[in-house]
Length: 109
Image (cartoon, rainbow, N blue to C red; front, side):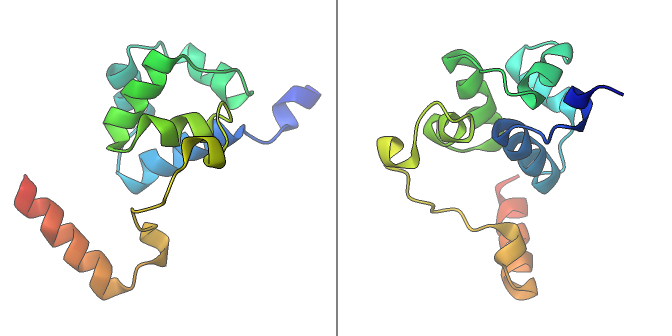
């Protein structure tokens, strides 16, 4: 086993994995949304950068600002992007808030 395999995932990959999990999506969904082959995901996990076009596709999939993705990829700082977190972290919601959010989203469908 190489030392590279023991490295923690990049901030971008951690962001992607968290968002996939929170949205019930899989890497196949990410590949389709971005048009990127899954083999590229290993590069992202290791810290290789993404393109602006790919960041836009990821943002669209996660329904967030492309700036948020660029910050996760460490291509911009939060200060440069002037991000203000408006979406709640699902892990921080009470059960009642989470159920209300799910109901709201189901009505949109």
